[in-house]
Amino acid sequence: MDLKTLTYIVVGASFALYLGIAFWARAGSTSEFYVAGGGVHPVTNGMATAADWMSAASFISMAGLIANLGYGASVFLMGWTGGYVLLAMLLAPYLRKFGKFTVPEFVGDRYYSKAARNVAVICLLVASLTYIIGQMVGVGVTFARFLNVDKETGIYLGMGIVFAYAVFGGMKGITYTQVAQYCVLILAYLVPAFFISLNLTGNALPQLGLGATMTGTDVTLLDKLDMVAKDLGFGEYTTNVAGSKLNMFFYTVSLMIGTAGLPHVIVRFFTVPKVADARASAGWALVFIALLYTTAPAVGAMAKLNLIGTVNSAVGLVKTESGSIGVDSEAVKANADLFAEEASLKYDERPNWMKRWEQTGLLAWEDKNGDGRIQYYNDKTGNEITKGKADAAGWKGNELTVNADIMVLANPEIALLPNWVIALVAAGGLAAALSTAAGLLLAISSAISHDLIKGAINPDISEKGELMAGKISMAVAIVVAGYLGLNPPGFAAGTVALAFGIAASTIFPAIMMGIFSKSVSDKGAIAGMLSGLAVTLFYVFAHKGILFIKGTEYLDVIGGANSFFGITPEAFGTVGAIVNFAVAIIVSKMGAPVPAHIQDLVESVRVPKGAGAATGH
Image (cartoon, rainbow, N blue to C red; front, top):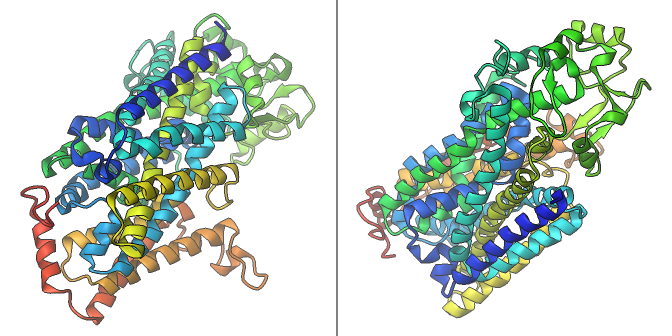
């Protein structure tokens, strides 16, 4: 069966499964719509949380970032998984003890202020809408490549699927759909990784294959990758770090506390029966997430080696249309110099996977020296040895542009795996993007219907009216998300790091101080959230070209790129969080003390003896 037909069958079957589950588990009350009735089993919730969390960024982009950056991309592994430790230990049980539906509701009640609740809604909407852009773009890319439709059509199809199971199913339908989506995406991620690791190293477990000796040689996979990457000017793979150590630390912290502050993740811990189940859910989520995250470094390294080996035969990787991948020592001997003409690939002889990905625009070739061959190396390096060899070989610069987002999706094709594996990866990429998109849309819908409409505009609205408002809000949010996916703003397109920075600088400090400090007041919390949001957006926008003041270039406004101690915009959420904490504490000390009954409430929430003891939920 050809790849296109097989992909339609596999993807279509997965969509049918999601819709069937959503119809079976559709929400019939506001409790089921917002928190699935509060009766989800911890293991089920852990799996759903893993799917909610492992977005298109985790499934599609993370291994690509690791392939490009090497060791430096460990910030994503440490930051995103470390955030779950914070959730499990510092937030989840206490928020479950509080017993509310949404994060803004907790903020409003803890800080005894509708204004604080509304500010939390604004912060939630900014973070969630920024995050959802990447999911919709991921849906469009996956549809475009595997189903032979344009990206715009792919986004419309994704919007339709999410609408069908999220609007009517609510959190209850989304939860059980995400369990199915987790199964699809984890199989889609692991199966090709097993195949590729086995072919390259003889070890089926990619976690072990990453450090294993390559088949037919006495060289380990990482040593081989270090050698060829360094020779081509990319820097030693296992030690390469972009930017300063301070920036790497701030980036990791921003991702950690951003993870702990993402509202669509936090709300998952409101869906379990007891406080102990909230902790257990976080533990199970870590187990399910670890299956992908411990595999990602191997996928990234093997994808990088496979890509280099495809273009440069001196790497010595063997690929045939019907055979497996292995190491050809004779090829290494024949083309020992990576810069030799016979070691590079003729463009007319490029494999089919390159032709297919060229059609998406995510892979492109420019023949700079007119030799009809593909030269792939780092021409921006300061390595004079690499530059000298390239010049001597008549190379005029790097000719191959590879978008990091294709590395996971293209890896099975690069490795010449069976068509059913490629089709499975397509279904997995869509499952990852759609599962997170649904969670984000629910968080947005809940903030609008429960926190704005019921909490501020019409407190007397009936349960039926609120449920309808939630569904309408969800539908509107899907339309907005689709529009942003079709027309991504320049400051957010292609990255979810900004969403984590916003969550880190606004929501996380407010929740932390709300749980562990009895002295932070309503005015302090409001000032802190607004200050954290303002400084983070200012720094990001000033870098991305959004901010202009009287004709002055945006970088001049802040003193140049990464002018604040070398901190990049993606890592600035940590600085925003520090500002939030400092402003909230200072303003609280200057104003009236926190009412006694709120201090008692904080004390009650910090002693998680049983769900609902604090407020009666």
